[in-house]
Image: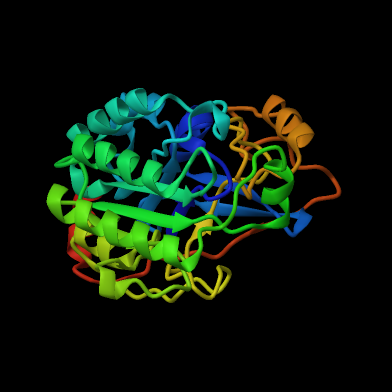
Length: 314
């Protein structure tokens, strides 16, 4: 089983104490986002967890406690964008984020910290030239601290349009997409950072950008030294190349309050849910009620080879 922590919220930034408590207890409860009264108990023991994939814009609080994950394989998807408080009100400034990125890379190694530059939003302020200059500056600062950057172009979901109605923007045109992709790939070659796309319909391989996987079985195999048998995640979009994982986060719970975020679509709920968070509780927020149906989800390791390496993590 691969654990995603999390596409739905920033667990490292805001809920790391809860995560470490769940690791220590060996299980977590996750409420089904499509059926609020269905709660799953998920085993988090190292015997079934093949890898934990962290998604964050500020994992600073986790760095000093990473030794508590010594029995697990894991890597970080670390987003650093050049938008500032205009679009990311509660995300640290770029310089602070890059400093934390370098600290994390120093501790766990560059292959286990994937830089995300996404979503790419084009507007009068955030022009194509602005993105090229910003990407180059960041890539130069992160050179040697990561081996990969994942980029994606904003998808104009209804909730994204609603949250950003005060900021004129548009999805990049095909010409803008090609120009950005080509320049990013060139910068990546110069700085030693492979650039891959995330769930993009446009084919950019000729420009040097291949379709990437955020939940990447090849990277997990490289990190863990074993082979996996795991299928594509059918719950994601057709263009998404990620393999199957179990997400332990929850929507409407991230205080970063990024305007483009698809995971926060009710700001009043974000405040209420965050206030209802208990670091000692099995759920990210709230409690299991008598109306809920709690079931134990059957999970197994996806490893098919070199299992003897696993014993060294016990």
